[in-house]
Length: 414
Ligand code: ADE
Image 1 (cartoon, rainbow, N blue to C red):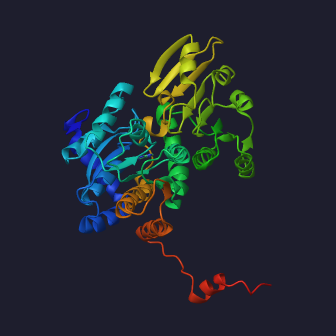
Image 2: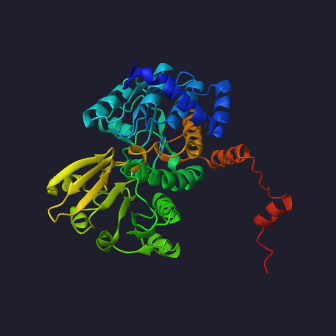
Image 3: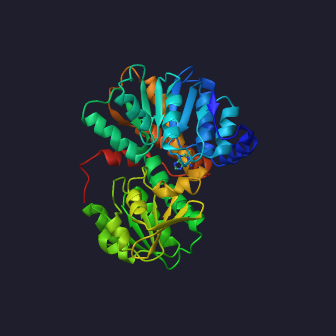
């Protein structure tokens, strides 16, 4: 069963999948292994992920491992319709298309859940939250969660003792957050801003709100392209780190007046308010790369604007009562997936090795895991890093026995 924009796009989608596979060697190696052992044979998995060519490679891998997958999109704007069609043509139950309305988005999630899943694979925790809200978690063995925002939601559930099955926080793996969150979002966010606007980054003042792994990557890449970067933060350690990385740090109230380009990456609500937008320069470009569209008060912007106009795909112009124009990208949703194609395959290779191996781990350890949020075991994380290095033909040193012994003793000092 499927519901996609146009099944005739499948041949183009398959070409995209082939291109992604060429750049995801670690996941292909994992697939070869799981195809033989079939550790997820007959396991029904419902997934809620961005439907990109990289997710397509993950779906093929889960299928090779024996799983029966049904999937919906993790964002109304992020689906690549050709990829969705290709997956539908390969027998994956998929319910997703680009530019879903909120109602369609919710309906697609319902359809993905209609296969009575035993496991949940999520990005943002909409599936986990939906199942918990309606108390229908009885069949669920466990799940995985891709992203920082989703892990924060799950941690809140764990702390309130309402989490009803074990979940592996894929996001916590070194081979996830150090690469996907930082370098993946760094590149794909700048990619989204450029595709939406085609503005010159060099010489602009860019304001990055939040200096977590995502904010760091975005600030680093914007700086690399010649922008003068300002960081806003609430955490004193992160603010200090940003200063020592060479960025100006100030309150948003002040940064709002100085910036040409804004990117929110905090995971929290109302980071850019209407008051901030009123003080921005004429022509300011405002975007978000956090998971949910809550960081910029887009509703408030629409309400206060005296005129709005679609200038290009993924770019809306709002004229404020003071006559200045603000350009909002991708409706304030994830700009990297709404206006571009998300992270490139090379980095999703690492993230999705973690996804599939976490799913296998949860399934194989279902009798011993408790209703908690787990990190992926370090051995699996390290194995993924080694596989990736191998695929890049990079060899690294190993500790000698003597070095290992030295690290385990305490008697030798100065
Ligand atoms: N999140 C960010 N980039 C992505 C991609 N290319 N595929 C799936 N999820 C993503």
